[in-house]
Image (cartoon, rainbow, N blue to C red; front, top):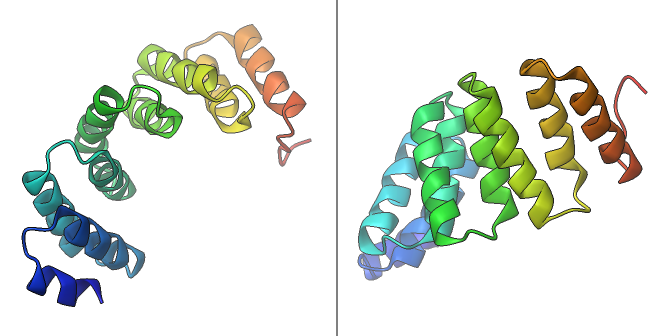
Length: 151
């Protein structure tokens, strides 16, 4: 469906982004990334396309490139907790513990009842060597309903 829409409306950023998402779901990440980039080229402020391109790059282990996309989303939508969470994950994968801590804290502040940023914050704090703060973050995640495999 979206492939036909892209053919009929090649200047539709939305059509390129939707086709990219469909391609990504089928495992065609190279083609998906090309359509995300086309969508962004047509509409540079298309936060969803930047976020999804970042997720695709992250899945490939291209953390620096993914971080670039998550940074853009955080600039375009500073209240987007998911963007800050993914930004933290990309920083964490690069061994940038304290910047990851900051990103996870931002996500947690934006969505305080969401346990995922708190769990990730615990991992980043532990990696940074702050066991007490890490334990507190994980305990807070538990208080929000997170169930851990080692509980």
